[in-house]
Length: 365
Image (cartoon, rainbow, N blue to C red; front, side):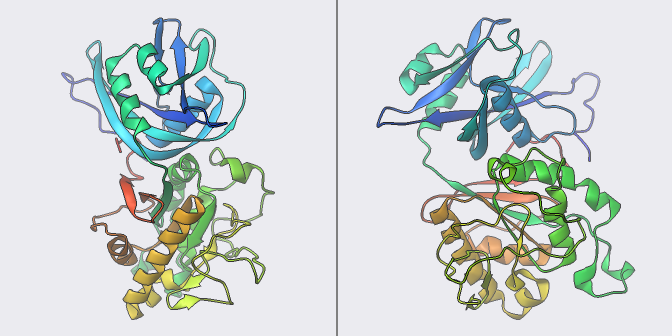
């Protein structure tokens, strides 16, 4: 894992920070957003804070909102990043829309945050101290609801020419395992609850390894599920689904398998400990039936958008271009353990797209 390269002497290393704009609405009342008061500066701001070492910015945003307001959020579409100077140092702040999952007591010290209040959009615009955050709030209030679909390239695996066994059995390298910390942060920050994977060992290991107990803060739903014993290179775990329960992930390239309907959500969910293995995502199946892979991608996107369940799909570099094409996105290089986040509108079309490179701890969306 590496951060940005050190800045030259005449250009100090930037300060990296992140935050999110969270909204609530109930009983037909106008939507409200949360602001925090910083006594040291005597200002009212949106919740945000500095990134910790080896923490990607999406994880920073989720953690800071949790600490300053007590809200557990998952990230929605990215907002315009802010850039300004603190003394002679450039401060870069990444922002996202925040979707509230749960609430608890805030943990930030009173010297840092002494108040967190809910205000209507108009009241918040009037209360915010900084003009750039007022513009950010206006941008946020115009966004429609979306659901994230993450396409992940598996972590670094043993090279083909160094492996004598079946290609599907190639394991992750030590470097690949080290990439799983940041991948786990990404999965957690976007609130992923459903996992889908190619049958290859390296793909299964990337998902299960990234979500090992203690590796990341679990999603709200994951925290309520019993732990499922597994190791990064252990056997694939397929969610048990009753015959009459539709499962959006267990879909072959040519259509549903075992009577499962591909166009309806799975009421029980899959959960981070039980990725569903899909043969259509394998390198072999994609090479034999590329059009089938594209059909699968379109069905999955429609299902994820309709269900509202954040989903992550782990697959191979050779299969990514066709999945991206099926979702109307151009191809571009993707590093091992990196992710493309597609924020799907209700029709299943990407309203916003982010690229997260696992090799870079600090990057703006």
